Length: 163
Length: 103
Image: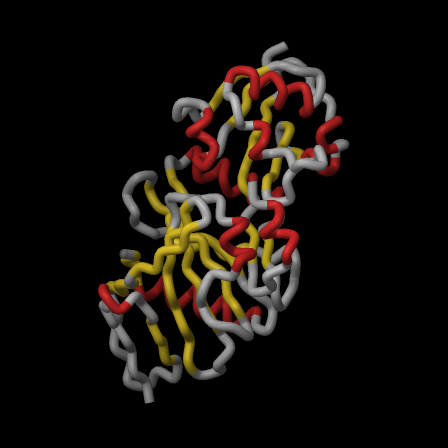
């Protein structure tokens, strides 16, 4: 299960909405071994594409060194799909190189409903996992709606219903 | 000639869990051959059947991506540090090449 702070998730979704219709990407770093995503780092999509994302290789090296020095790891690797569902594509699976990370996908295909789903991708195998949002503040004026899709056996909905 | 090589999590199964190993070689290609002699199989994860660097792997000499230094022919000097990182990439477009490249 991915446990993530509402403020960080909001910042990820805001990044995805801001870059729409291009795909947005980034990570959330956390202390190594903790499984706690604490430091949101939005990255440039060097591909600047509606169907592909790629970290700039120099920016990635800098960030990975920074994490190494701070004894952090990429707890969450996120990106958006802007016209399709929040499910890893074959390309996503081919490139997935962080077996310890939660791969968070955000779909911005619907302007009002944001799909957020989390996956483990290890050796080409995709496993969906529940997302638990902590420290969520109920905002009666919220216009953003979230849809969390999870595997039926482990549903842990934390849907936020706005107006 | 001693080169320090930093190994990403996904390839540490080849290095007995080690984050850093030592290697030698005049070029990246030599270095990968040297690493493969002690960590069998690691080279195949980095190089395609056609003999080029995999699209989804980044290799750096010190701070520079080897794609800008001649790729596998990039020259190494004693004391250089080589970092291997899985490229962070993907996206909705399922292009066949990405799938075919999977090592």
